[in-house]
Image 1 (spheres, rainbow, N blue to C red):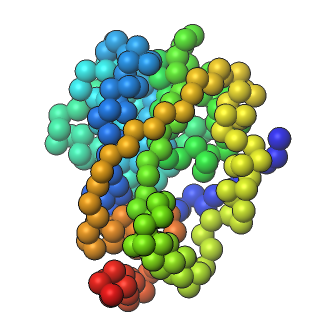
Image 2: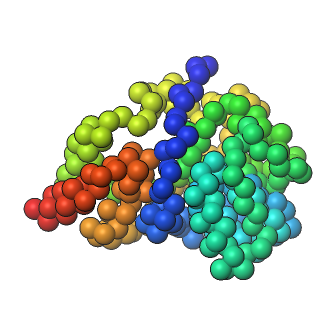
Image 3: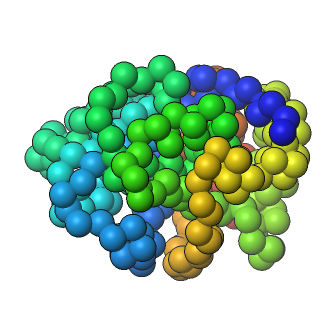
Amino acid sequence: MSEDPAFRTDLYRGTARDYDSFRLPYPPSLVHDLRSRARISGAGRLLDLASGTGQIAFALMSRDFHEIIALDQEPGSVALGQAKGEVLGSTHIKWQVGTAEGADIPGLFDMIAIGKAFHRLRRQRDAERALSWLRPGGYVALLWGGNPTERASDWQEVLRAFTAGWMDRIGARLPADWQKAMARDSHEQVLSRVGFSYEESYDFAIEHVWTIESLTGYLYSTSVLSRQALDDLGPLFEEDLSVDREA
């Protein structure tokens, strides 16, 4: 077992609005499958850990849990999620700024869901905390979403080169070789070591049409090309992206 790389705590500062607007929601098929596998009854409690602006909490808020705690270390994300919840009347979602190791959350949960974030946590320490929060027979669900650069079509290869060039330009924001660290000690290994029984991984594919606007917003929602990371280079970044996509 090796020590997990330490990620900056401000990676998503200022991204809340872009994240909420341009990250794709979890597919209904995924949400339905999660309900079925975890035998969600509507009477339990959910912890949405590293919740961001609440993509998981809102997907499961209507009839799945009587109480949801949405916990994230980024105050801007929590504030946006809370404001959105007030508009929707979702009074059973409780919002909290904090981390798994530092949070004071009483009681036990039927499910702990972590969306697109487990790699950024201190995985063993936070998995141990998660285990202590779960009722017997409870579930931890790691949810992931695709991104517009992960396939091999021509435009995606161009976009990969574009994003790599801009990441080099503004400087590294992520720990060196963090992906190799994940490969050496996988999520499955970490969870099994702590005492979880690994079930399986499932894919739920959807089709999506990207536009220049949505690609720009998506990139602004990331930890590496956010508005904060780009700073005063934002207008040039947008111009460069538009020209590159239209070429």
